[in-house]
Image (cartoon, rainbow, N blue to C red; front, side):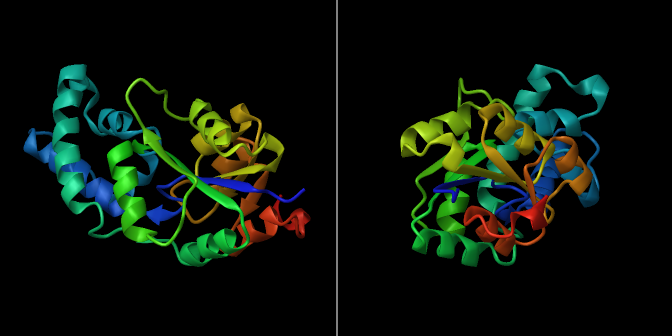
Length: 225
């Protein structure tokens, strides 16, 4: 069965944001007197929202809610002004989104990044794509792997689960899709290794964006397990 709705994670799936995220966290850490991290440390720190990112970046003996709240303010202030400095779409992603849109497939974003940043990045990098929904982390809403964000998008679009595909780069994403009872694609160009995707029961594995188009259209699916 062909898919009529594709829900994408943002960081590590559509956009390579890791350098700008790392710079923003390091800014907040340094401004508050804490040690910073090397850029290569950040792929394993991201994935569960900004608060969890700050928590993971802090020394264990300094990880209390007051300090996290303070750093989160500094992180967001810096990130809001620098979110596009080093961020780029992954090669082939703009073409994939354009093709899906031209084929009548609905496209949505489900991210653990806070809503304001998600909206801003999507508008900046994909102004010609008519997304059915662009959802990030919002107050009083659980973050992934809770499936509520996927349920919200499905309800909004009216596309049934069996015609929905969820695309992401992490175990959190694969768990989210599994809990929502939708097929998933784990992409290998993001922040996490392929072993994590398989361990968390990715339905399919994509090594390049063009693979996703084949999966959407039910072509040669045996190649993507």
